[in-house]
Image 1 (cartoon, rainbow, N blue to C red):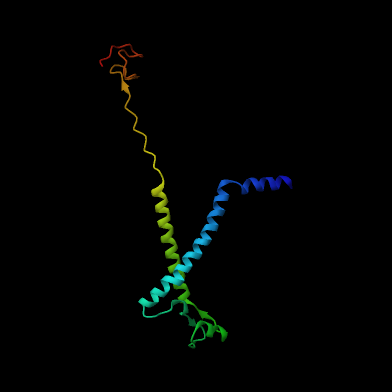
Image 2 (image 1 turned 90 degrees about the vertical axis):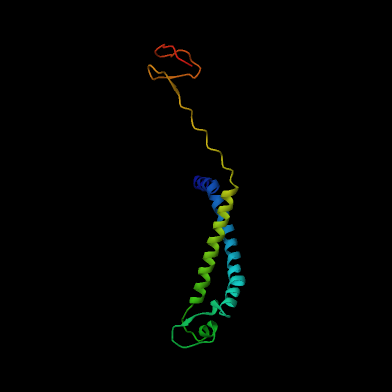
Length: 149
């Protein structure tokens, strides 16, 4: 049993697992912020643009009757198809995806790019035996031919 806990500790303390846990926690908080942004800022603005339409209150009662609100339909015990909430979730998703795109783009811009290594210089070859020789050599080390500089 002790070995089991040691293995678990080694797994849990691995850098990737800790980083992932931090990412999940921050992602949850980020999700709450974007949900608030959608529900409290964008949806009211969208309602103003569309002439006062409240997307969150848009629904279809499955019994075919009309109800004043979603709450009234719920009190009557009627099932509802809440397509307005679905529209809000789509907008929420698009905003989260856009924000993540901006964050990743910013992080990529902040990364210091290391310059690519200079291409290797073509080796000097002996004109007689075609073997590689030093740049400052006056004779080929392979065939002993005299070389021009």
